[in-house]
Length: 291
Image 1 (cartoon, rainbow, N blue to C red):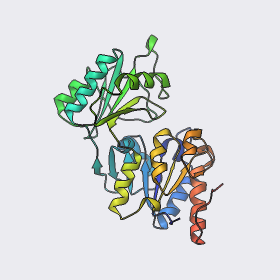
Image 2 (image 1 turned 135 degrees about the vertical axis):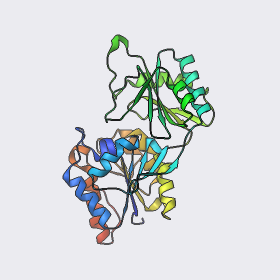
Image 3 (image 1 turned 120 degrees about the vertical axis):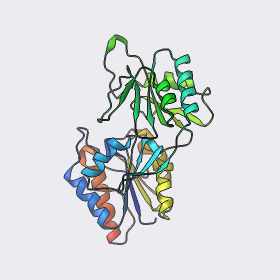
Image 4 (image 1 turned 45 degrees about the vertical axis):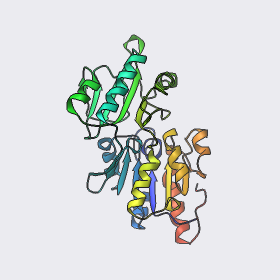
């Protein structure tokens, strides 16, 4: 097993504790990895504005794979290095199909220029603060501005006017997937990360493809990448990376996709594993399950 040159970490449920904070131990561990010459990359479903704050809190990273691989940022220069976007026509056709087959659907678009256009009644409570533009009809706003879409978020109306938590009921996502699967442009995919709204993005795009873009820029092979995550949207990344680590708080299916299982995010599992990796690398040993 090759020593890692690129360390990729999910944010929510991995770097962050459940209360949204980052421990001092995690900051120290990432700093030590940086000092040893490892490239650091976030790999998250968050958009860049909500990722950049975390990057700053941990003392800086080199890259950020955001929105589950649809955009890759150079975190050092705040510039886009790769995007995977649907055309305006694809985006508008997707919204039309969604409204046709799901009369109570609410839509939100993550645009390639960094803006977020939400139906005025899109009501999912995100676990991070982002600036959104409320519009009467998201796809009409997309068509009017002409900016390609990275990701559509889709939710169903909640009865009784209750606010929808980010942990939306899985059955809503399943209803959306069942309604749209096979009807979308073949280049697109409707899916669910296990938490939050259903999503539509380009087929085959994931955190793994985003990290592959980063690795290729630096001549790094998948075998030289260590990835740590806890969610269903981390499974492709864990399968691609040479050293794959699931968090102790991850579902069993996610843990089954990884070679190693760390402690939970409440117990600084990512930091503990990185510390163990660096200690073993200093001694010339290959990684072993830390903690």
